[in-house]
Each structure stands twice: as C-alpha cells, then as structure tokens.
Length: 193
Image (cartoon, rainbow, N blue to C red; front, side):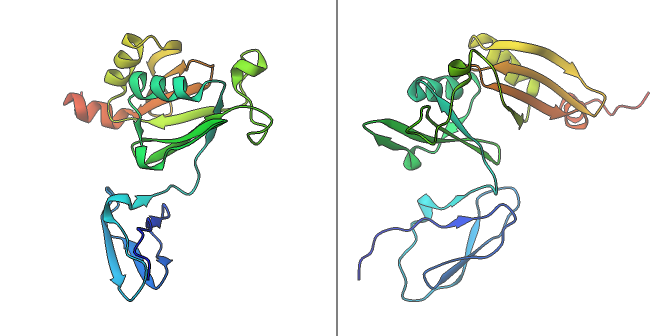
C-alpha cells in the first residue's frame, strides 16, 4: 500500500487521537513529545510532521498576508509552521506559533470566508489577540525596535500581569503579557519586603 506520511495531530488536552489504526497520546505537557500506543499495518506517521493543534485558534485576514507573515515573525517573534503553508494563486494560508498557541494568517476578502482586515474597516477592530510570552520586557523591546505601533505601553496590571498592546501592519490589535509572578522570578525578586 501507499507509504505517504500522515501528520499526527493531538488536541490541547492531550486526549487520544487515532489515525488509521495507530493511536497517539501526548506524553508531556510542556513539549511536543508523543508516544505511539498501538502500531499496526496503517499509514506511517512522519515524526517530523507531528503537530499539536490547540483546541481554538484565530484566523486573521490581511490585504497582504505575505507582508503580515514577515512582520509577525520579524517584529513579534512568531515562528511559522513552514511545512503547513498553503500557497494558491489567490492567496496564502500560514500558521504561526508562539508558545503553545497558533494563529492562522490568510488573505482578506469575500472569496476568503468574507473575512476583513482592520485596514478594510477604516482601522476598526472587532477583536484583540492575547498572547502570553516568556519575557514581556524583551518582547516589547523587540517590537519597538521592529517598528511596532505601541498603543498601550508596558505596565504592571492589578490582575497580576505585566503587559503592553500593539497594532500590526493592518491594525490587528495584539495584547502581549507575562504573569507578574514570572516577571519577579525572572528578575530574581522574591517579592518579600
């Protein structure tokens, strides 16, 4: 039979997923470690294409999805799942990772699920994407150096986050944060005294 690779996709909670007659379960909560539970005469799985997908992820529309992809990777430090990119004559789909989250980038327009970019709406936003990062101070510095439009400066918030907000090239609003307890730990501050 055919021996094409089939990616194993596990949901966010690590529940068992079955592909063909081979079952997979996530064995780590912190990284992409997988364990085959049962192997039979099914399609082989290429371990380099195994991807864990979150239960929910946004799809952002852009007038120029190629520019959006370049900007989000360069300025905000997202990593593209290059093996997942789909390029067509009328647009591109790309998946970007940050931490354990994923965001999909696509072209805006009626022929693309009728999705609009904030640039199509006079800069109006209908949502904001919240992203936790490991070092919000370094992330902020990178975004500023990359030319991000900061719309809410870096500050400590009463609910326990250190955060800032920025707009991307087409006006999607991004909220980047880090738990204050992690900030104090990272800085070597016990918080006592």
